[in-house]
Image 1 (cartoon, rainbow over the protein chains, first blue to last red):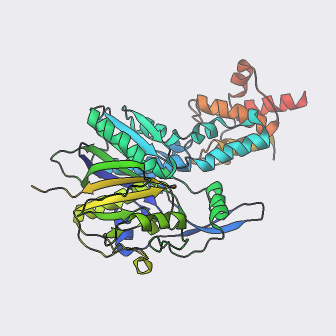
Image 2 (cartoon, rainbow over the protein chains, first blue to last red; image 1 turned 90 degrees about the horizontal axis):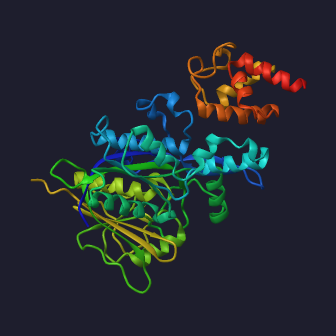
Image 3 (cartoon, rainbow over the protein chains, first blue to last red; image 1 turned 120 degrees about the vertical axis):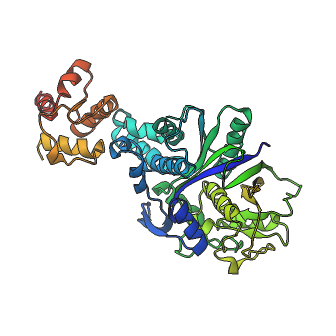
Length: 363
Length: 84
């Protein structure tokens, strides 16, 4: 695979907004968990959730231009603008910029508000604006339109594998020369529906930190946010790091192998059933890290993992791993230096994705 | 709440005119272009909102064009239709 440079990062999530907030949260191992109330047939349900703010979008777009854009798309827009600004491309010619957005669930709040309005008021009173925002590619469309990006605009939705699949498309566009840069990112949002599903699947929620490396324990907390990377073909200019390979597939009998010198950045997020898979998949004595307790459990978390990996590779130092004390894996969760990271994402019964990133070789 | 005030509240809240309060909307100001600055997508949304909140279906484009001149015009149109 052609080497790709990560030139900019734009993030918003429970930890705050922007690269500095993410770096501070990773350094301190602390993020902000809110409490949400979700309606259900049994009465209101209280549960913890990582919520993202979008106020900083005012720095980039007039308020009036945002009035038809919902929270889901606003998170994406903010991530996209922040990544462009961070990569020094804000205000540049974007005629050869592609946009790829990954989302596990899409704009669930608007989608279900739209469906509720049809049930409540009939299809003739369904809001056209809600409909436009309810389709999965609304965020990618809003980003491309608002930025004036003329390259291809794509949305990829494959639940937990959405991020690596989208990254495959982004790298392909760059390899083919269809674009000079790609805004690659992921968005997922907390909504009544996601909260209700969390309750149904995982039972009453506790406001305890996620312990992703305590793989026998259920500790997931739903999260929302957007994480965008500005990607270009590798050149001699400054970048956070390079992306060397993106492998996705299904595991049956075979075992995954990883580069010997790579730190394994695990996408474990407190879901017990996946925790068991990580424990079985990670080779003994691997060096592992995991930061989902900073941004929460959501399909888009895999893009936050890539942003965290890029920050680590930029300065060469691994951030402390929150909740490392409860680790029940063979891997060794200790802060150390690294020049290569393999971000491992497991999903379902046998799906996997491994993205290998490397520190830039300075001249 | 009378029809004019209800309309102003709907405009601000349902069309997300966050920079305005209902009281700041001039009864005679054009809704589209200069004035409130609404656009064609708002016109579609407004047709739906009038039906949802007042039970009035605007089917005729010419009728809509006249009704959507201003808050006063729209309130008069709704009052007229409700009286039929």
